[in-house]
Length: 440
Image (cartoon, rainbow, N blue to C red):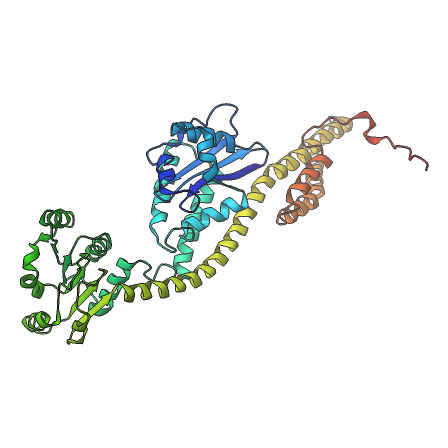
């Protein structure tokens, strides 16, 4: 019996954050969905739940659809009625579901195109479902193929190589200027979200030390402890600036904090070692005229937005290449699925031929009597089974060829089963009766 792939989910495009929060399944094991009752059509299940999406990928058997089962179970587990969930979901069947899973794994369906974090989340979700025993041969194959597709796209495209967030772009620019960031010291002025995120990227690049200052000193202490840095009083900015190679500023101040006059003295104290300023504040914290000084580089939020937009366009171009790869891989996976449904029919055909050969062989040997020599008996047996295999060779070859044609695979598999009566279907008495044509 043929098996069907279906996906039900919601994401950042179909549901606002408050809905995604209500129906999140982060701490839910597949078994908690209570989908393993005797009459439920769900045979395999994987749950993917992140801040931007919740998706349930299923395998059902026959033509039964598990969508309503999934919807009720999902909503009930989140203490809501299905109608509260229904307006926000999307449903994908078979080929569309396969293509979607490949796209998600390859970060083509992410809020930030090309960001690789989702792949790790998918691997964690899959691992949990394997441990729970809710996956099977089809989803195991599908997920492993999704991971290999994602790897192929990372290898054959540049979709993940260009920064597409303000904070990440700032760090990439710093790397272009300094090369290795490991020996560099960073000062974080203010505690805005983008500045904090940029600091996180810098920490991941192994910077030597982080200084944090803020008008509210307690907040500076909080951020510094989070990044294992050093908090400094806001009034000490100018005394500490000579130590910093990279400065990220985002205070929301109405006036300039760092001006060109003071920076002339600071860069002199540093013996003109390069300084890199990232001014994310609006209005700006740093006097743009400082850019006139030797070995000082300033980028404000508009500069970074330009970099981000340029990189986004490059990622979109790479995404088109990635989509072609996904289409190839979806076609290959569809072929595997069709061959999977073909195997039982081929096995049944071979068994049919062997049973028929054995039956007729027994009759022949009985008629020939007990005086038959072992050599003759063996030759007759070989002839019977050889004829059976040769007669079935062309139907099996025909079936394999047709299995590569998406539109006709199921039809011809069904036809072969009926021609050879592999399912032992009763034949009605009138099946072979020629009906008289009515005269006009």
